[in-house]
Image 1 (tube, rainbow, N blue to C red):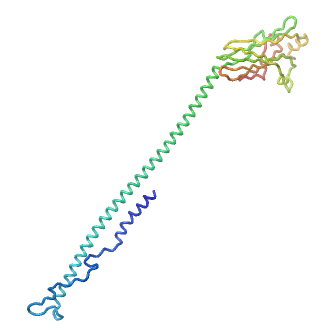
Image 2 (cartoon, rainbow, N blue to C red; image 1 turned 30 degrees about the vertical axis):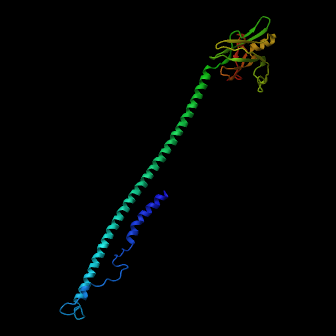
Image 3 (tube, rainbow, N blue to C red; image 1 turned 90 degrees about the horizontal axis):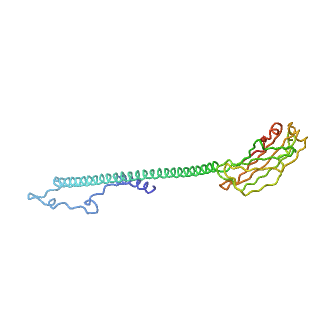
Length: 294
């Protein structure tokens, strides 16, 4: 860029330098001794000497003739020099136009290169965004496929979940079913059964219960069920009356841990109870809290 500017400045100053210089005098006037008058100036006519003070006509005529010749020669020299200067100005201007054209072409190419770089950056950014979107789409599709195909284990009940025989011996059965489309592996179940006075106190003792795990290494296929039964317990007549009247409730709490077919750990927590008419019908229903699943 700097080189181009310097070249343009030099090209612009060359014509001015050419015009500002004085014309070089003709060789006849530079470094040469004055020419002698022609011999005929000193030649005397047969009629006697001429060119004296009394007759200066011939000498003056020859001097004027020499001056005219010098002026003609000087004029021709100046015309020749002017023609050369005009040619120099023409070619200098032509070179200037060529230089300006090259500079314009350079700037145009520079602009095209910059635009190309910007377009390339935009294309690279768009490609990166497209790759990120594609990667995110693959993750979503993979997650969706796993959610649709994984195992889902929940606890269900029927009309024989709570059985109270004639000897007032209570047996509770919960049904564990795989509602998913792939097997569940390494199932571990934990369950607690107890009676609690209603309403449950604010400190909620159900949240602080601890009970042992019942481990199982068997898999549960899609749609299959397994059963969890408690050890039979004998209830007093007073406790049975309180449960049927709704003063006391029978609670069944538990948690099921397992792995789905994709190797992801899953769990299901459940909290059910039976009291009043539900207990009389030998059923269980879900409590309002404590039920979670992944």
